[in-house]
Image 1 (cartoon, rainbow, N blue to C red):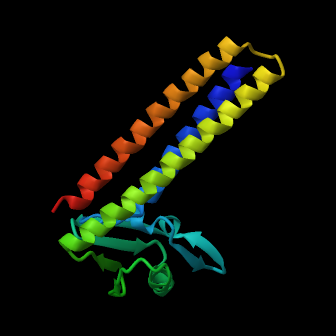
Image 2 (cartoon, rainbow, N blue to C red; image 1 turned 45 degrees about the vertical axis):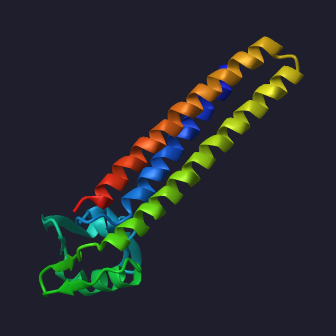
Image 3 (tube, rainbow, N blue to C red; image 1 turned 90 degrees about the horizontal axis):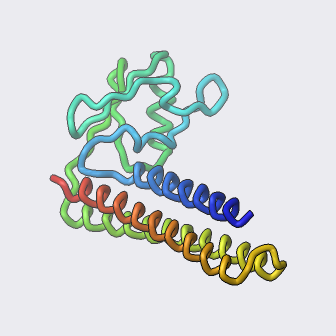
Length: 185
């Protein structure tokens, strides 16, 4: 039973890491990255459709994305959706494809983005620590209900702490990698 609580805690911690990775994918680096368009949905035949399902997105150059819709009639809708997504990107429609040029990031903007990344990382760490607290509370309840002994409680709390340390270290690694990408010129 305590192993189940720890396992569920680890699964939640892994989901927190995945959520952090998704959030970090939306943070701009100096290079064009199709993942910045992951949350863009286009009104396509009356329903909201993710951009990636109605077009192909390629990176022909380090500073440019090219969006080629499968249906040329949706060009204007795609352009409008990108503008409404508030990504600070300017789509250029040439009648066949949409090009998005990424300007070079200034040193100041890079530092601001690194600060944003650090905030996201700290939020992920807080989420992981909250999960640790939930698991420890479950273990304390088990000990109070005489399902496990005091020694078992101490052992399982240590296991939970080891998992927490491992996932927080993972957050640090993911964050350092993203910071490196942002500061790269």
